Image (cartoon, rainbow, N blue to C red):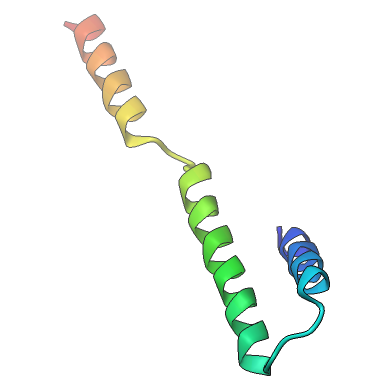
Length: 64
């Protein structure tokens, strides 16, 4: 995942080519890192609690 982020940073900085300051480059990289982090949080849910609740309800119904 880190390699993918590095490739995306390289791609975007290549498109811009010249930054007015080092702060501008840092802002671009920071924005990309935040976006990547948010996407990762939404996409990688290791345990969906709703599915767990439904399964427990089903097991309780079968046991009764």
